[in-house]
Amino acid sequence: MAENTKHVSYADAGVDTAEGARAVDAIKAAVATTNRPEVIGGLGGFGSCFSAAALKGMEDPILVSGTDGVGTKLAIAQLLDRHETVGEDLVAMCVDDIVPMGAEPLFFLDYVAIGKLRAEHVAKIVGGIAEGCRKSGCALVGGEMAEHPGVMAADDYDLAGFVVGVVDRPKLLGPELVREGDVILGLPSSGIHSNGYSLVRKVAIEGRSVEELETPLDELGGESLADAVMRPTKIYAGQLLAALRAGAPVHAMAHITGGGITENLDRAMPDGLDALVYRGGEDGPAWDVPPVITYMIREAGLTTEEAYRTFNMGVGMSVICAPEDAERVRALLAEQGLESFVMGEAVPGTGKVVYDDER
Image 1 (cartoon, rainbow, N blue to C red):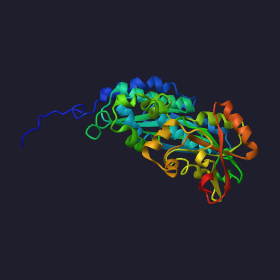
Image 2: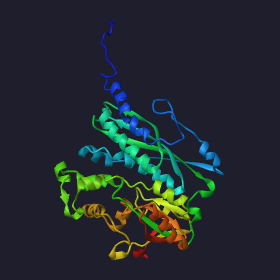
Image 3: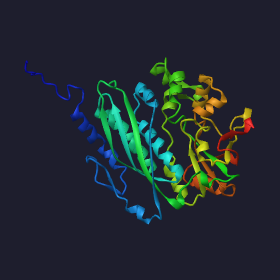
Image 4: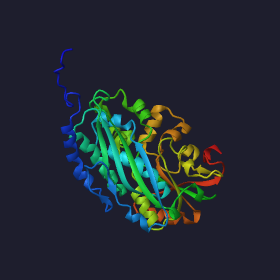
């Protein structure tokens, strides 16, 4: 049997460990800006350490975890070569999933799978993740960059995020606190956020050149499609938690993500109550729908029912409180820079979302 003298290095197989090391060096400064006092050590260990000493002052600390991704919005980022804000999207999708329980995000980890690792490219992505962590007050304690030659195209990448937070049991929010007559407040979204992008790509991106996508459109208020669809997801967690600490008497919240208002607001309702949303019939909803969402609904020919199951319709987060507390809650939200509007109320029902124009 002939001796095999062929030499194939890991780099020859498509994985550049030296570039991986450069990528870690490139993100260290951004990661350090997210540190909290509880963070022990830095990047480079096999695991990340975070002190639980602060939990000792709680009566019954409850850990709350969440994980999510950015989805097919990344395909548009890759088409446009815009990677600076998708990390914010990733953090938003995770931290705003745990704040409805009243949980404070403590630390965050990310997973970046990429076809061909380029330090400068990854630094942009992780820089956005760090920005999202700063906005939400959680520490970026670690992550993984995985190069997948032969599995992903060189410029392809995917993101996943993981967050751990905490809430003291006496301050835990949820459907069990909601009562008939409670007011449902809406917090405006910044646009499409990170859901519905498979439809967005189908009706507004595919078949258009980058030049077309970057051309301002009157129907988007002079904004280009590229700018409108890549606007980062609004992060509510930090401001909401500040309002709660200031004494906002909130019963429950709902993060309006995939499935729209119809399939998310019901998650904040107990079995015996419905969320009645003031959609307003022919006059439209009792709040402003971003032009980019209206544009997508028209381009796709969606029915009203389909639209409210696909997009956030201008509502990124819902906050539920007693009617006598609504003005106080709105004032405390405003102090944190969060605009709000009354979008509905809790009425007898079976735990669903119903609309005033369908009753």
